Image (cartoon, rainbow over all chains, first blue to last red):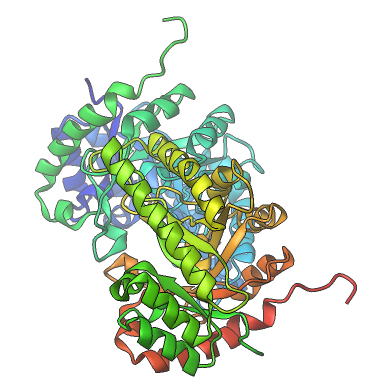
Length: 292
Length: 292
């Protein structure tokens, strides 16, 4: 099975700087990369775009915007400005990427403000912030991709917890400007997963499909609870088939936050990623034609 | 504000044996207790029932049955037998409790069997096991209370992750025999929470309302991530009002798994529980009459 549609998200080899990440990706035979703002801004946007162009890789997304749950106006305004910069960065990096690059900016909602327990109001601010960014995104040709985060992050990281909830927001805006991220780690447990992936697909809302595994026991730092596909409990064939059945044919990012993987040599991680992708994802990522 | 409806779940003072737990509860002026099978069985059921009767406390529930996700027949059969014993224990303890005791057996579904990634089939076995127990529960006058667990436990502890999903199972059986537990810790993040509490209430399915807080950062052991009401992010007034609005007028259990609380003196924990309940729960636990 080929790994044609595999994209290595930079977070999987977190300690590699941008040139190392691009080289590692290419040397592993991976054709696409998911970028992060911090390593991009370390070298500067213009230099980063040139590096991406030289590498000949597709860009599958930029992580990440969002974090717009603050209650006060100045923090809210600062977050919107930051997101506008992220939109511009997405457009520039994708323009530099190989054909097939996807102008996707991944958005993480942000958690409850300190001392604030009003989830409904906080979620309302997420919707409003996306509304405030839609015109900028459309002008730049960028898709704002709302990533529902696992409910264990609802308090401190992301008040958008399910795919259904992300779609409830996204569907208030045009499908070519606001979509959702389906990340197996965050959504695998959802009893409504199959139905909500179908809904996302019918609406043309799947902006990104990301894969990594849920491992147990959870490590001490719950942010680092992700594992390589096959090392945990997630049924990748079932979820991947469901995503493929919607017609999604974009890149599939492997994004793993895991201390052991971060501590390993980036080249060996990239090779391991290719093998795990070939074993657990690639065989199921083509839509099955109904009259094949 | 009174704490009339407060029940101290034994797990909150985990290191206290049954006599100590009962005495601690009574001495703190708490009128109801939520029991656990292990400390009950330490002294034996008959002795435990006598102790409960002597204490003059209401029994609000017995924790816990369930864990019936095993794929093989002998493990499945053993789990059903274990649950039948738990049903009998619930009936005996509640009969010994003061008037107002609730014949509620709390059920935790169980996780994915080792190496099994088929969530749908595993969830189907939970439904089937409850079906196999319904007649025994009805004969004993016991309510099987399905407790949805937070999605972070879906892999290794409970494949029933939302109130909606628990109700989808419960509603296949009579309401006086199968209900659900609304535990703030497990469900507070759910975008469908208000609507699903309403659904549970309309169907007479709320068998137990349990409260404790969600604290951050999550401690190293995610099982011990619960906090005293007021110490975390949960909006107790909003959730408690919603539960009260359904007409639920049973006891409200405080069940906290937290190492620091477990290490404290049980008497001081019980006092702290009363105060936190009075401050964060009691003022909102009466249904507001529409023409008050």
